[in-house]
Length: 476
Image 1 (cartoon, one colour):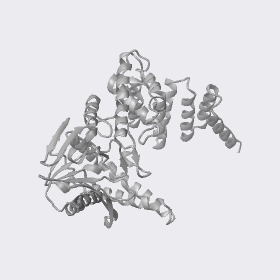
Image 2 (cartoon, one colour):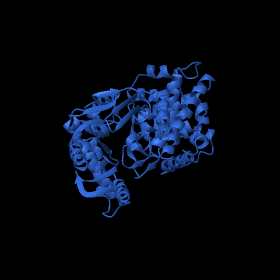
Image 3 (cartoon, rainbow, N blue to C red):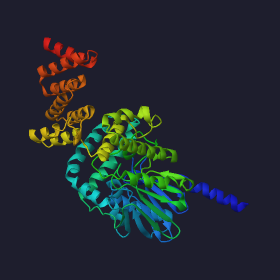
Image 4 (cartoon, rainbow, N blue to C red):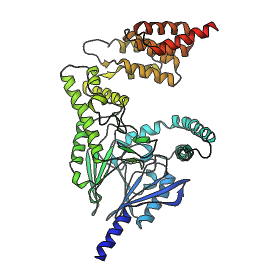
């Protein structure tokens, strides 16, 4: 009886998370023991940092993901060795290609690095962004420093801002040092099992949403399903970071039949799964939350397959599959928004129909300063019988506002002018063009656009207010 009581006490202690006084790089160190020989460690109380998982197996320690900064990961490696009481590191598994999961791979260059075959290509793209990031980080860090200086000492935002400032400085420092991003040395395309004696790691492709290389890792002996950055249904902080959206992203390879098949196989093992664990400490995921998200993707995929066979257009799908009407339980769930749903449908439509988004194509052309002929070539597809592009008024408008946000006013005006030409009966496109023309300093044309908008929709109160302000300014 005493033995049973002692075992129960030990089991309870194993499940407890502790935060010591220890810090690394000014960020508090956290360690959580998840079971016999399984732990996760992370830094910070506020910043959405990656958790580093570690498992003690018969054939060595297996680590899952890195913090993303080599010098920090070297220190976390020492923490893991101390907590597990051994240092025979054998494998590092990356759940996907993003730098905050792979940037510390060099701290495990003596191990076999495991990951999806698309991670290597993702790291090449990441390296190609270095010059842009070197220019971006100083301004971003300066903005954070200025914001921090403007806060009162007791402001609850101070602690979070300080941590995020440290986090960004660490990544900027690593970026400047320009250490090589090490790709996996052992790769797979669909599924792979690592048998390490007493512990098994079942890797499954679930890519095409967060990144092309997303991987789920099922560890049956610990009843754990590690899900990377793909999804969470609980956010523990106000800034969920990489877990902040669940949607189908553009410009990456997709294989949704394989995505769904692998998720079905994983979720069919419900009786063996006790915990689903995202790769950032500030997110949690339930079995029901994961299942609902997979069913969301399946519903859109199947619905679009049927719609294309019935010669229905994307406007039909968008009206049919709104979150509020078709997915009411997900409408207020973490990671979902109507804009994200719109983006998912648009990308899935492109995948199934072969049609590209005219709005995205025109945005890139205008951004690159393309000539009028290139723009006209895209516009010529509007309303033809079998177009290469789909044209959505709301999407074109959204990209126009992205130009305004980037202070690319001339490009915004051009985008809104294109939208007016495509959808001349819409009051909203004239309103948006008027706003861009005002930013460009062309008041006369702006007034004409607002007047046209009000002619089509006399209830456009915002347009009325703008015209009153312009008229008032002219009188003074």
